[in-house]
Length: 203
Image (cartoon, rainbow, N blue to C red; front, side, top):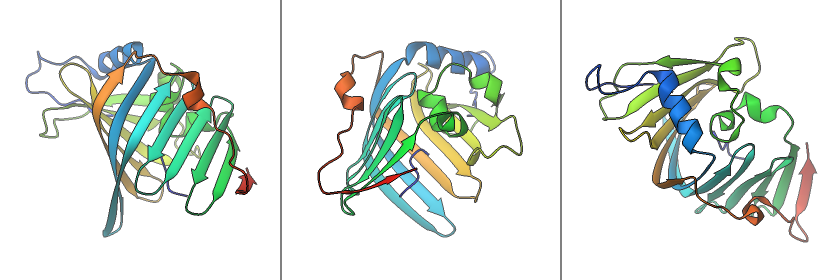
């Protein structure tokens, strides 16, 4: 299964953009729900692969990531995570538990306890007119699954990009378009019914 899910602040002038904590707080306060199209590029060594899809999130802990080309779907109903690989006719089911707090998904779909788990820092401009903030796990030896998460916001505090590096050095770059926050999303979008005849693996 592909890793799904898979934060820096850039300035054009010191007076224009708020600090990292203000940017993150502003985003979390307006993004109780969100939906967007995305492009995801995974870089492993000299190889890279780009896929596209759509995502929906209702905090806390409900999300839906649908990959168009790969025909893969990841759904969390806040109790369990379902990973459906249609070409393989396989569903992997994981208990949500605290696993979301140890993944980059915690930043988007988790509760508001980000700073109790992660350090939030500003970083210099990346030259792309976005405000970047960086998040790192506070527990250096914790099995978080990633080393660094970065989120890029435009001047209206809209999330435009996200990058993370896992513990194996693989990099994932996400770009968001048509992002909407505070929108009504049917709860049925976060429910998953296991199709008949598929292999099911419980973890």
